[in-house]
Image (cartoon, rainbow, N blue to C red; front, side):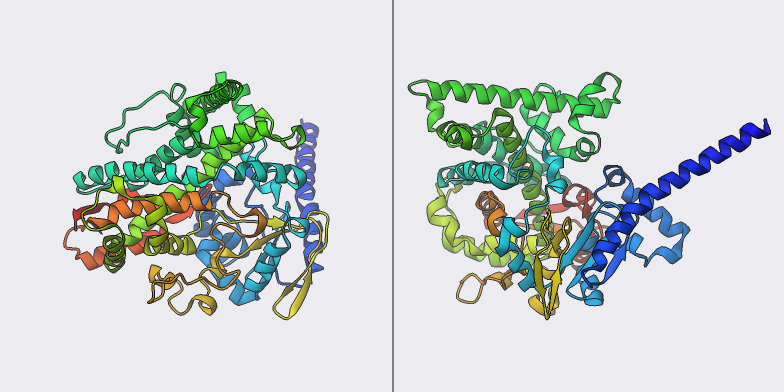
Length: 555
């Protein structure tokens, strides 16, 4: 019996020792690689992209901070969770300089806080600093796509995807966003107080995408008006379920969900059903478009939605430069993913910032009255005539993205060892190093944005002559930059500006007050909520905006 106990103990010790060795060896190897660069290093024991850690980080770290208070300023607690950059802003770079590394057992992360180095990295592009597809492979939910491809494959994806984002499609986005926002502001004005901004913004964004991507129009329904539908029966609900549960899909993988669907708990089973439903929907649209392309004529041939444009462009290309059916599905998903959550989260941030800044609402309304007229019908607003003139609306979008960029961009060195000049130092970067522009630093650093760099002030983007003020190169990467910038940049701008114009021309928004709270106190509380209760889930977002109700009133 004693012998058995000793054997079990020895086995446990050996297993733990092997686990420690398995963890320590790659950490030491990565640390040795980082040291070659001669820049400051911080070490953390778990990579923030570890799928299991993605589910646990915000639950585990507060417990550690409470149990071990002396760790609160440690690298483990400062840098070992999603979105730490938003909490730290420029502090790490002011402490360690314009370049530093974070070493984990999985990766070496190089952070750049120098705008010139950031601009140089983007300029040199995919040959020396390709996108790190290891970080985006989670988006291969339905197939390879523009976010996960590299080299010649990426050039094919980029060329064909770019044909989808035309001025005709922007016209669709403009008119659909105006129609939906008109219905949304009617709904919002009847809710006093309003607690569904984030949910309704997601609905608006999803419906704009439904029309622009698949040619499907849906009537806007506010949060309290919607009826629950089975996610396996509705395209709209299936996509909504997928987008809301991407973190689970990343952690388990769609194949695993499908394989174990009979044994899954209810929530995971619903996610798996949504994946199946969305796949079937994309297949039906794809087959319909192929049939329309083969026919002599079809009314759908005159529609410029993304799916039909992608199928047509692929079929018109030479065989070597075409997308497979699976790649078309992959791109349609990633375009929906990138165009839905990014816009809706940014829109939610903007609405709450506006509620805290009545002077900005007045500033934007002045422009809207001058450009659109105080009594004009939104149905008569013109994309080609009016959108280019709405610079103040666009400034609200840029300023919100400056402070709260939902999707950080990343590059890596792959097998090369490029040299990058950072300030007066030249850094030779080893192979297999992830390189990130420190967006939360460079977009808020007082050296480039002034003493009010953390203040939300859209007026900084438009001068007294109503001319656009372009920031210093490398200090704003809201849509990434270089050859791999966001192909849907104009799409998101048109959607945001159209919706904002509907909302602010005739309406004002303010926070609901609690108890004896004054309106000024309530506005300060809103800003505190934005700063303290926004974090990275899969994208950066406000966690519980419904706890900060708003009121919309006629101007």
